[in-house]
Length: 445
Length: 159
Image 1 (tube, each protein chain N blue to C red):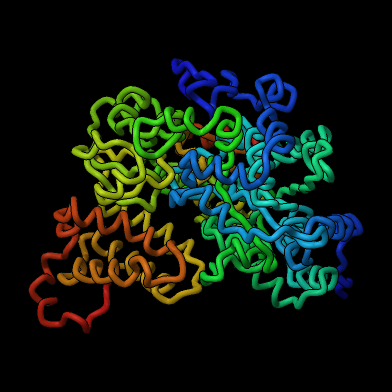
Image 2: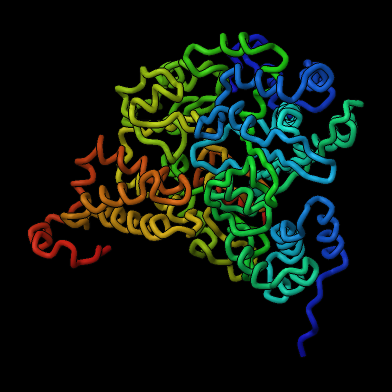
């Protein structure tokens, strides 16, 4: 966090309470900084429906990457009131494992109570009576911090039966994973929580009606949930005014890679990538220039320096051929070879495929093999065509979940903008020979 | 003569203790594997059978989970687990040099354990520490902004 930024309650709902020494803000300090005021206000003066409507009005979009409207997601939960023996679940997706993304870790480690307050408000809104924070197993410090924060919230009576005499009952548990990127996918997360392999489930039925153990379940990302308290406290008009674009509120954004000051900052939607790169990340390191960048994680399409003046919001980046994703951008310098870089990314996606559906299980290792040979200048004439065909075969709608479609985004955009680097990987000695045996010979590497 | 494998009362209590958090005991299978692994370093075939008895689930179901998740080790590992991040930001900032230095210092390749059983070297997906890359994790400790020069002292501190 850049200390030069003046973080105010009015302008930085997610980070104004953060300490300059980066230490965790525990219960006492959180309460002194208006903590749990929104929750108390909500459960005594508002109905669940009113909260859902507020979040709908606020225009809050999910911060996990897909950008689905949070209020709409909540309203998909069945309306029927539950009897006390029936469970309804609120799951916090804290399985952050997208390469290039480090925002949820920041919120968990520094502001656990903001997250818990967000969970409580969301649980109240969707009338959930049980919740789990699904934390990736590698976040050891986060595990300690969340456990302690949950204990504190329990001691204050914010979790448990008849919370603050409101009749609202909610239990919250921490569940840690054991490694696998796919656990971050909504339905795979549910399978993993149930103690199964993290294979995605077919939708419909959607988790809202048939989720954890077949019960109504709502899954929200850490950053999404952390936004809820301030929306309830300060209202939807205020929240909308924070933004400089059609997407509302603020977003944790940042730049990593060979920049002078890698990091993340809470910034309004609509800020340009150039402003983040130059004003906050302080530009590329000496002697390097920007060759390409990924807006929000390894599964987003590459953009070029010409796109730096685009507004950082969901719609604009989609129109530019990429996605906002997690909005934690990565700078690629001019010394990095795109084929080698994409090979690294595709190896990650191939390794992390759950193996459930054939296009992903078979297609990603195939892409890795081709990229390996291109990287070593042993590619064949038809390799680029094969990669293009694979991008079609693994595209949206062809697989069970978004793992493979996400995996091919960096590949297809790299081939679009840096095609010559792929062509340079074709072995000149065998170039003519290959012409005659397309479709017969396997890739050598 | 081999003695019969049993879980310790501590392990059994820890696993039983989890039952109050979940509607269905199958959900404990991953945590149960982690509990046993924390005590023994890895999870043996016999441990899987014993866990399955406590949770009343078929051992093959526990096995299917154990082989799916990357943090569960199905063969003995070293006392210290070194996991270097090989994801894209660490790629740009030079994880390969870190990996090479680790392999050279330990005289092993990724996936192997040193002869003295002190270290096991493994890759790991993004550790969410990209603004401080390259980064590695040794046991439960995160080490940021690494350079090859820092590796020898770092390894020494775990001996």
